[in-house]
Length: 434
Image (cartoon, rainbow, N blue to C red; front, side):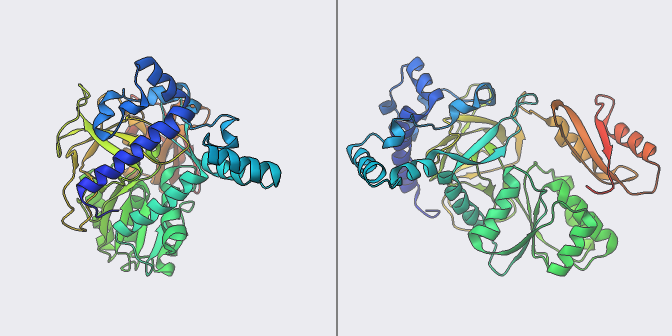
């Protein structure tokens, strides 16, 4: 799949898009079924990816109004067979006559949500991305393909530093190693950097995955303690965009600790249910064209731009169930657009998204969390700290900080508030362990 020629990739996408529109969207998708009727668009009008421009865009605000309407949901009658004569006969024979719920089980596995990822949504209206058993199978496969793209092998020892939670990055790290590639791995995201570092030393970690902020504290502690972590050969970063200055700081700390790892990034967007990997630093984020069709459009006009041209990223689901989108505007702008030539490093022919990736004007839903987390990295008296949304009041920011014991707690709070700037008045929680 990942080394097909472009003509074959487009033909595959056309077939899967037609099937998605005619079998899934028109029958099971409440929002788009209504939208197509309102717009006077017949599903047969969408014969291939070249017809996607006929469809209006979907935005985060559209989804936040009624997330459940974006979930593929068969009616009760449709659960008794897909509507085809063969399916109805199978339901009658197995489920009714033999009391063997074969068709019912298949429908449950395909359409019943069993897993969810939390997305940022808007500051006041977060929502969940639902995955069915069908989606989880795709997720497992893509996690494995992504791990291979990033150069992982079964000889690696993988350390997942994402804190446990219902979000994409943690589960991607878990599935890509423990489930898909059977790589020896451990999760240490619930521990402080000292404990994580000790685990890495004893485990002889070769690959570390985490957010830029988690990995920064890990690397800084490694440099301070002169830990023996020369076995680490790769760092995989996702969750937040990383600027070049922070990347070089992390690289410098690892160098002080005797490690010289390759630092890869993943483009992580919860709505598309999987992250996109790099095969090498700066190679671009390799997409999965058998699952999503990616477009790059002008931020103002919405017109599709040419290959390699800057624009906002838009995707359409051509496989999968659960929460399903057509032409979803991500709010992420790719500085180098989308390119379709063969990657000169790994030889994959899939479309690649070229960074840097930044938020489009007016669409950065939580700039404060990203910016404040960045400012908290070197606050006097703070060992490590993280900014997040406050539970029960997502319009406020909560800062959880672990003091280093060199100054009083009151002084720590003063330094945190000062670093955040006068614009913000975050809630601050000092904890012995994060």
